[in-house]
Length: 137
Image (tube, rainbow, N blue to C red; front, side):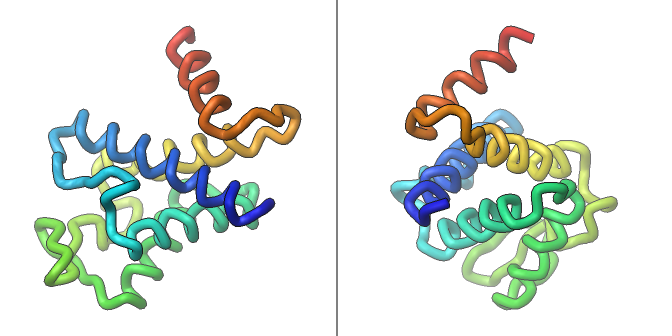
């Protein structure tokens, strides 16, 4: 898969996560166009991880995210603070709330939905169809 496609999937995942966070009352997220480069790179690495590991579960996805954050100097904190590199999700997966665990489930589902190779439309169009199908269920 080309890097441009991976970046498109990462952007979709980011925007879905932003929307989900917004629904939870977290207004701290920025859109893909406004978010810092490190955040984009994190999403791109997450997408690549799902592509490289098709049987990856949400706990494994979180563990990879955690390890990357830890390598970048992040630690647990009650609130996310970019300058201090603290994040409330810097805990093992089983210690996350159901709402936070859902982020990993959603992320993987969006990546896999966008990877449907039988559909050659641009990823953004496929995403709209995926969302329409899930709303119909």
